[in-house]
Image: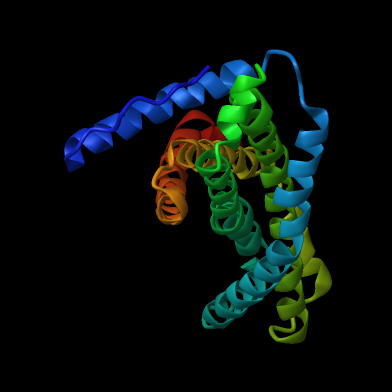
Length: 263
């Protein structure tokens, strides 16, 4: 069972403390995933709250991001007489980069803030202490269902964003760039290979871990009543968003180094 220690003062000591405690908390959460009891109802509820209710945001973001991207690509490609490469560029940009990053940032903004605020409120009102009093592990009851729900729903939302973005690019390709349907879709199918699909699914899984660990830890470690919960919520969104961008670069570098021949 994870039990936080008193926080030190000073920026460097506080940063080292938070990093150490977050690592310990993450390991405790991962261990709890393989133990009983398993709160299935809580898991399904979190999948609905964190995933299903984010679908409309992902659809709108993917649609307009894909259309804007396709419009800019088509203008630049027309100068070189290479508008037939639009489908290929849309797949590479959406599946490899834009889809995972946009979805991760959207989920971080919507879900991470909600998780931190909810858990922080539960801690300030001593509901987490009440769970411990009834011999219920708060990590297993509260953290594990949220982690597992994000591990399922973030990749699903990312795939949805990729599909909607490519469809948005198709609309621009046909109506604005006047590209034949086959000339758009043939490169799309050709470039949906193992390498692009792998990196397009690897990044959302990394993002899901980041969102879950940071937001849950910030909720469990918040203090100071309503003001502390608000501060923890802000920190959760900021840290999660920045970490996703850093992890996106590292993931790209690592995956390209390991499976370069599959692209």
